[in-house]
Length: 397
Ligand SMILES: [Fe+2]
Image (cartoon, rainbow, N blue to C red; front, top):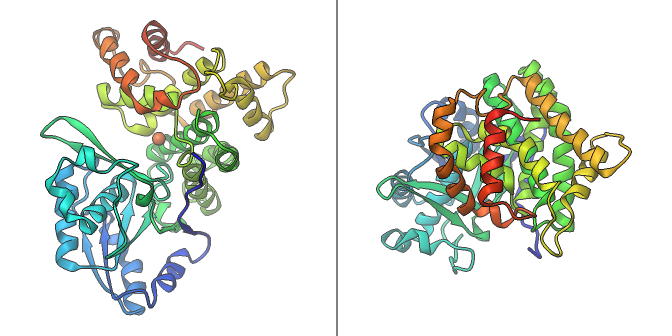
């Protein structure tokens, strides 16, 4: 992708106050899109926006794995309130709901058509005629605050609807560390592994560029350094800030190069076995890296083995050869997983053998169709993919 997309990112001390200052004079109506649990955490934001002249409304009906119906309901609320700013406040579900609702508020004409065909990269959307979009992440994982995609579920048709368009990248990302302090350890651990996967997938992607490489390397180093500490002590503000920043920096990296095999495998395992995104991706990551570093890449694609060796060097691993460096990097990821208490295999995540055997064909079928296969640097299908899933279940080294 010969361009680099990024919102303005507000980070560090007093980010929330500086967010309000950023909005001053740019409107007088804002809508916050969040869920019922997080609504209470919005009070500082509401007060600071009121102080700079905004009437603030909250729509708090976001659900996990947001549906198209939820996004449509949020867009109707926006149409009633007519804000100049739409603010997604929460984890990936809240931010994706805000992205989709904002698109449908800007373009209510799209709601009546086939949304799977409307919001694709080449569509002319003409957004930002009514409002701008801001994202305030409260977890450190998805990078949704800086990426160009929103994923919804169409329950009626039992399918995913992906809004994918450059214009969906938020205008502002606001990284307020204090919002992440209460995250439970399990969620901190699994979303942190997702950050590492975003960074490494983004660096080894077929679509990597000079511009995506830098953020991916930096995010990999930060997340691998700080994830164990933030899991040891969730009240460590410095560690929380590093993980929040790493999540967004990884988003800037993979958002401009896309993710790869760990996400194709993780999406499939997550969908079939109902395992959360970060956990499923975390289980898949070491196996996917071992795979891409031992197979020939597609023509013209940077060798994943050399790319993993780059990352290993950047995170401080000293090794005698690229192979040894890549193996040491994969070992480092496994030891982080172990230290933070995340499962190393599907078996350890509670999937019994008979269920695995019953679902293996479905796992392969879903993964083969996953868009992340197109950005994976080497071919992975059929028998090879089946072997990989069985390794993921057994927990082979
Ligand atoms: Fe992810």
